[in-house]
Length: 93
Image 1: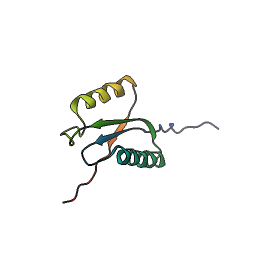
Image 2: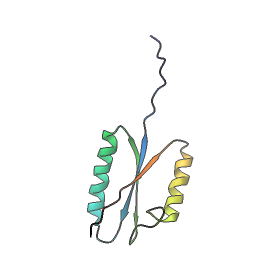
Image 3: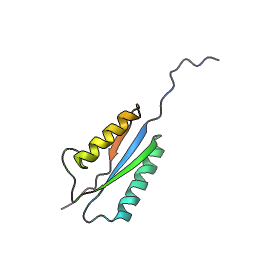
Image 4: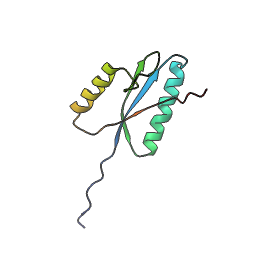
């Protein structure tokens, strides 16, 4: 039989975490591992994990501008679609 449907491409994910004040490296690692499992469960292939240490998230990138530019260049070099997801923590007052 000839397959007539186009092949569905697997989404690729780049996980981004921010090590900020009040968040230990272990908590960040655990959060990124949970996010990795969620991405895998959703059918995405996690291609890399990037972290950055900053006192607080920055606008508009969440991470620093230089790190964001570096990620952009890396994604363009791979000539594929990489869907970036940032792990945001919800702060309650």
